[in-house]
Image (cartoon, rainbow, N blue to C red; front, side, top):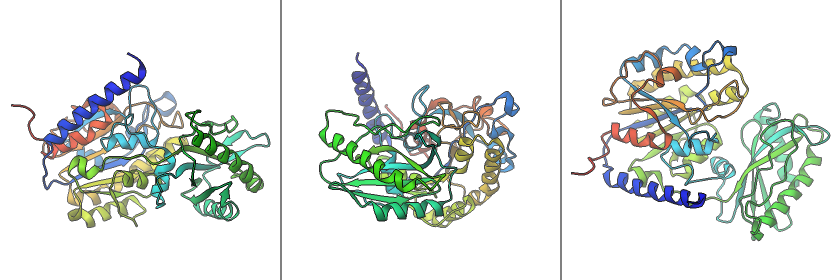
Length: 422
């Protein structure tokens, strides 16, 4: 069987299984909460005392939750050995097969920034970066410049570059080094390959059509090349943000709505545009305003009666993992733990705490390692563990499973799935 046939076979099986779940799904009044510590998973190494940040962190509130009765396990974000981006990682957590539903990073980020994408728009996620005189990337994140600096640079670029040929160019700042570029016009289409080497000490590669026979993609690739020609001179004296990278250059796909798929009215409480965009793409309502994890949990309490499902996203564990900063990642986990009692003032019927993927400090980036997960409900049972850690999760009753099934475990714990068969 050829690879494309294997994918089609897998996709058909997923659709058949989805139809079974759909037939079994019951409407209830249960409250479900999915709390995601981005990049939570890690690996123990001798250099870090053979502990992970989660194991090293002092987490009395998580510990108490675990001892009150939780099921634990580990989740494969996409497939064995595949390192996911944040998009596939979160789509799996939302119950969408990340191979079947592939979405470009640019679309997600653009939606998160509130940009209304037109059907023919192509969006790209961008990073300001640091390059040397030969165009070699020295720092893919430009030292994580302040958001105010990013906004200033994006305003300057947006004022000077409004159109390339007959294609409108929309540039909008996000947080820190991140921004979005949207290409709007006739006769263009994605996807293009990333204009990003994905590691330092390499040049920025050109963005090229994934399908070289697609005339619209070839046209867009020429527009992107001209964008680089125009932008780089404008950034030449703006070090450390004297270059930029583009990735996830694609159109917006059609995604089945979360509410229809699970019979749950869902809300998102996230602070970063990407995660707002992911939630918006599946139809979740974005609750704006909260910035700290305590404020996010307080907003959950305020909106408790208005929604059935809450997606709460905590970013900092991922950023510190990417920086290789073990102590800071540990501290971020401790800060999350300190805020947890606010959420627990009104325990949801089902609470899941996990990550969208692992970001080991030793690797300074995302990895394929399964992330730990816990589920707390009246029916989760207790694995009789003392803490929530990678090591403990290895012993849990949930075992090792694909992340796309987490939402189904949550539904089952909410008694939302009817019995299958006679």
